[in-house]
Amino acid sequence: MLIKRLIQERTISTQAEFLDLLHQYGWEVNQSTLSRHLNRLGIKKIEGQYSLPRDPVAVAMKARLMTAPPNLIIVRTRPGHAQAAAYRIDAAGIEFILGSVGGDDTVFVATKPEHLDTVYTALDRMFDTESGP
Image (cartoon, rainbow, N blue to C red):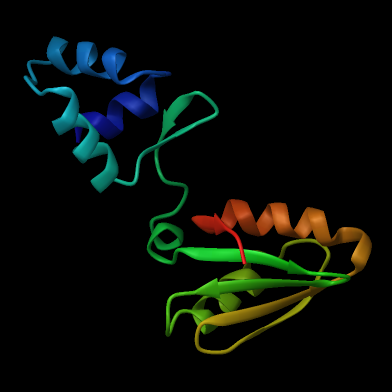
């Protein structure tokens, strides 16, 4: 698809810039149509430029992260996704994770207190996350 190819080949920072490029390729779309396409494809503006989703499975497996100091991170998923999330966490081999336990919609991730922020950041990158309790 042209939208994905443009993002891979160029740095695009505004929807106006995106529209100009699409018009150059003969695509006559307006801003609201472009916005819907970007949303449907999971394309987000990250650090000032449009980026493809990191991992389609991660996007589908939306999660919410919380810390439970001193050494736990709680990953809340949609019902039925926690064991798959725990498997992804274990398979990723993230440094400083001591272990994880997945239930139906919750994963507990254990680390040492001094590595809590590092592990939280790594998990935040892995999943399409929302902040909050």
